[in-house]
View (cartoon, rainbow, N blue to C red):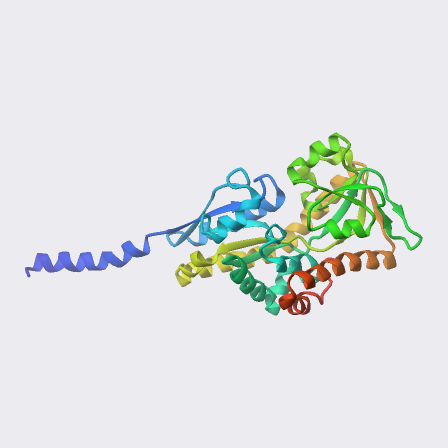
Length: 331
């Protein structure tokens, strides 16, 4: 081999590893909600963080929201590897992963849940049930309020009496609304505005940070305080796609998800404060229950979810309640 050929061979050998390393992994992502939703804007920060830290290693490309894949089909799309990453409500997978209820009923924040090992336990369940892993839980300790077209009646013990009222509902709310005396009107979120417009609804439950997304402010006259539960927005990933990543790429995704869990504590608190001001300015009355009534109201909502979980997933219910039921994250 001539001197020139030796140099050429060394140069080719030196370049080969860099060619392999430069092959950036591209992951497809979809969201259960449109891009204008507050929680989706926050999720975009996760995507941006991964793409910034993962240059040349891993990148997330957003396909969009339900206009790309209907929200009720996204869990199947993740399980089958049609998309790699999905952002949405865990309750949307309830038929496949009944343990999703545990997130809503959790008394721990996402940061506390990860530190206690609860997130790892949930991720193992997602792997078994949906061929997916949980990258992160974005809730910031944010819960749900009931919003009504008129202030509610109260029982002698100070509890809301919603007898005869028609509330926009889903499987997540059904038993709670029934316990409060309300009638469930099952419908997709996208149908809510027109339903209020036609007088079909007297109220609904939603997280405060998502309230303005619906555009129903002028229909609503009252909000019940305190909030209950926690929003159950998860970033999940197809397990085969996750396992197939390099350790470096997996760490980039994990670090970005953990950072968002911490960041949402402050960002969602700021969004809640801004939303409170906007709702007050719109003339919405905050009906604040007294301490004893508020505790009973919150306990009822949480206990109903745990009871449902015990019926639907008896193998995991006790462990999940122990892991997630101790701290008052939503107070």
